[in-house]
Length: 231
Image (tube, rainbow, N blue to C red; front, top):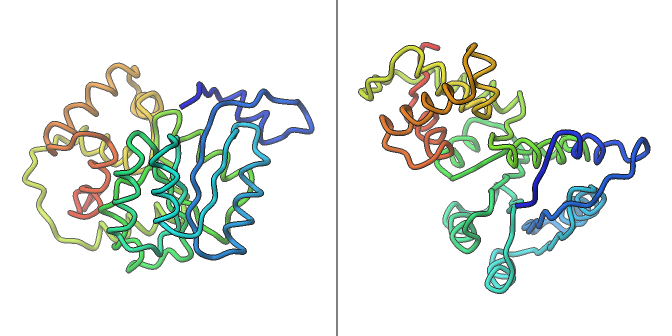
């Protein structure tokens, strides 16, 4: 994935103030709704942080493309079958998965909670700015979760009566909650009043206790097992 910084993203969002350099960011867009697909394609190609967008209607077309080309992001509609989304992720190792959601109902969120998602986009709230910001947040090492989605996820989690059994300390519970919010190590450190290195150590401990290989898997486990109940 190309090197990104906040200033580059901000310039990309407001091109009338500055003409930003184009960065190497390759997007594969999968959506079977033609109007949505074409609209997303147009929106993404206008962002200065994007150099390649390949838009297809079906997972089969996406896999065919990915067999020959690499991708930095998969932008996929959430109404695909879970197995289809997992197959796409497997076909694009290293690509970050962004899910475009039509609704944030509990049933929909429950369906996607176990997927290796790095960010969510809500169709009716999508703008060039929110799309660029999602790319930035994920490229910076965090996740992209709109406030409406985060609020619904926390309500879902709090309704579950579940004892973790993972032995997380109160501080590690805080760190896990901030991972669910999509914060990077630097942001977690700032929120908790510690260095980025200290935050990284706490994140590593949380991943080890949850037996998760990465933060995305930890977030999925936290949401699916109700590990933040009581926060």
